[in-house]
Length: 125
Image 1 (cartoon, rainbow, N blue to C red):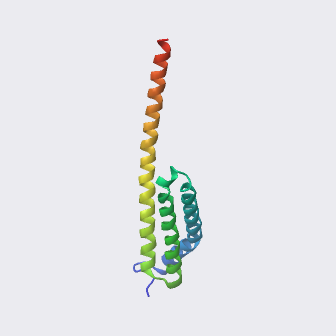
Image 2: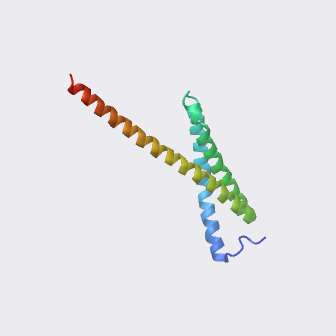
């Protein structure tokens, strides 16, 4: 099976080296996310969001498994599946980052508004 069509042997070797070096980190971070999600689930509020880090951790572990399969079999389909897991992971992370930025902006606005209101109330005393 041809490893990756359109790539020369040097490019394939560099790619395999990168995949080999990152698969351990993918598994480690994936398991860390799953454990973190499980710990979130132990709290009442955490139950609402625990599925997100668990899902993201599963995506990273699945990407690591696809990396193993790619390296063992030189299966281009495994490489594509690994990249699809990355795409989903990074899309989720981007959405969560945007939500966090919006929530932070709202919190700052609320904090400064309440401080302004409190200072006006204190001046009228």
